[in-house]
Image 1 (spheres, rainbow, N blue to C red):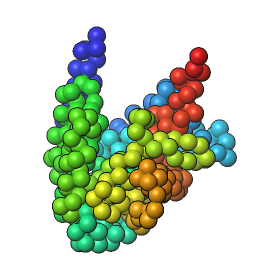
Image 2 (cartoon, one colour; image 1 turned 45 degrees about the vertical axis):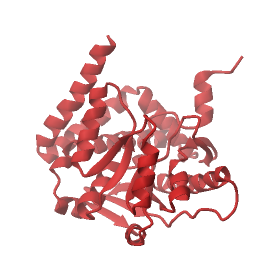
Image 3 (cartoon, helix red, strand yellow; image 1 turned 60 degrees about the vertical axis):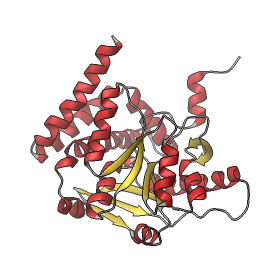
Image 4 (cartoon, rainbow, N blue to C red; image 1 turned 90 degrees about the vertical axis):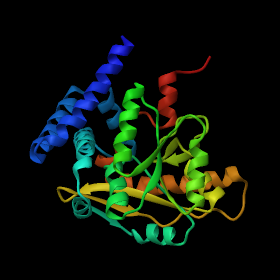
Length: 304
């Protein structure tokens, strides 16, 4: 049964990549919105979790406002998928025209200094499109990390897709990713990491919208160990077809403290930058899983 489910999952994603990118764009857009609205009306676990997460981001929202936000959030989420299925067909000119990233000078100045740069971003808008803006519109290759998916064939499909967009993709598990990222940074390269959720024991606890969550330590530790510049990035949709973004000022390594203390301070600074972008554009935050520790404890139940 598990094998059948895995094959079905992989087949559906394969169908998306093969079919959606061939559809006329208005048809693909309408299809994505239809799928989003249908999922939203069914009120499944993912939609309810998104709404619960948004209730923390917008604590004074009425039930009606939360419903509006979750509906817009599902549309934004499906826009991510429809765009991502079609990204291999986007030209450099299309990417340059449809992506507007503010304060990109932080990225260019960091790379020009030879220090290496870590771009860290949350699950906002379309992080794959932001990556294509880097590789195609800016002509800068970069290295990233992907979580291993099941089935393995689906993970391989995602890796091949992202590599076709000019990214070097490393598997999250296996133990060698961190060392490779550090080598790329010491050579003056660019690393891009989605960094707003880490439920592992190595995750750093941060205050996020008034409660405790865990975020990955990797961006802060890489900056400390390699001297790379750590730059938060936030993204949002606006003006129809355009995706906007902002590269925030560097997060400096604290001058004093243990490595753990420095990592905690830097990761909190990342969380604060992410929170600002998410609060401004909550409908574009695609967090359909549990994030806050209180929600995880609720699922697990009290210990005995």
